[in-house]
Amino acid sequence: MNRKTGIDEAIIAELVAGRFLRYVRYWTTSDRRIEATPSTPGQWDLAKALVEELRGLGIAEVELTAHCYVIARLPASAAREGRPAVAFLAHLDTVDDVPGKDVKPQVVKNYDGRRIELAGGLALDPQADAALAAQKGRDLIHADGTTLLGADDKAGIAEILAAVEYLLTHPEIPHGPVEIIFSPDEETGKGLPEFPLERIRSRACYTLDGGGEGELEAECFNALKGEIECTGRAIHPGYGRGILVNAALMAAAFAMMLPRSESPEATDAYYGYYNPVEIRGNGEKAFLEVFIRDFDRAGAQRRAGALDAFARAVEAQFPGGRVHVTIKNQYYNMKERIEKSPEVMRILKKAAANIGIEFTMKPIRGGTDGSRLTELGIPTPNIFTGGHSWHSRTEWAAVSEMTAACRLVIELIRLWGEEPAA
Image (cartoon, rainbow, N blue to C red):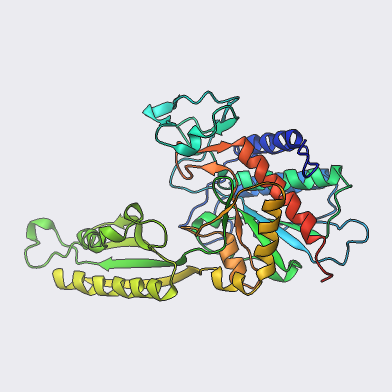
């Protein structure tokens, strides 16, 4: 029992960890090549299970939309009905960079601080990972080395639902109305394309889609996607002199023009990058997909313009070939909109302080569905989940940090219930 807040952390740890172990077994890998929402059928399986779980908790107002968005509402406590509604958001899908099927979560009780061997010659090494070393004596959940774990973002889902259950079983904690949202295809960068914004009543939202304990985020990248189509000229290679234009080689040449000093592996903090995520094709047609990321919107547009310059340079190298660049917006930096609603961060920081969490503000080197929701008018900063080494076969989660995230959600809900009437 936390004496300061009266919240039983042991109960919360059990609620969070049990859910998380169930959720990660759902195969919810999304597919950015598919425009439909959701992009994969497995996301429906988890969404439907969550709907049933919410109803089983006694939540009457639960909806699963035609595009796999789960929306539920926890009614306010007596005499708090007029308080402003607050929402919490996490996403259903996992990234397709690493296999996400047949996840076998490994539970480590009272971690002894030693190196943990995984399949395929991989390992969790506390000497190389200070966050892992700090978990000595605590419980961990990690992938077995054959797949990712799925803490991004099933830890967030587990923390939100554990908070809801705790509030339902502890009516002595007063609160205003709460909305719960689970979304598909966050990892594809589509940005809530079919989200029913008109059904949301909250004036603020928080995503649970972050990293280690205490990390709070209110700014993110501006994200663009460059789709590059290279058109060559095919002919039998034995007769290709002066005629053949190899589109596959054009795409490779384009990729090599992307500055290595402005790549994900060469940048950190507030530095943006180009990230080629896929290259495919043949001698006649080839395609390259490049993600552009920059905290400054003008910087993102500058990089978009550079892709056009690279295209012209490739055409000059391959006479007769053509390169076409299409730029698509994915999401924008949420900082400006959140700063216009200072109460959203004020309450978040107060909640963290109230429960004894030492927090740091840092930029998200990526984005969340909250980035797009903020753009749509609902300021949505991001909260840590306790997940580490995302999108990898060495992904792991700290149960104590997942518990802390759940406690923070509960305190946020309590504080929003004290805000002036909406």
